[in-house]
Length: 107
Image (cartoon, rainbow, N blue to C red):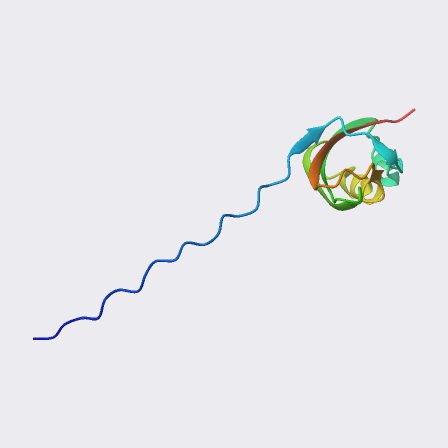
């Protein structure tokens, strides 16, 4: 008769750290305005809207930008990412996600 060894104990992984909260209406202390893209002017696109989520660290610096909505798609994204990456927020001691809406209007 063969006796199997006991099964090893199951060790659970520690819980993942909480995801940063999404803050709508966060106000930057330094901002760089996006420039209306030349390609959009050339293609006669007179307006657009982009909603982006900015990952903001404990020091108020933007560490990442994700486009969550864009109309028209892919026209203003690159310029929004460039400009918002340079924004700075008041240091709050914790990480969070700021949701920002940028509207483009060609005058």
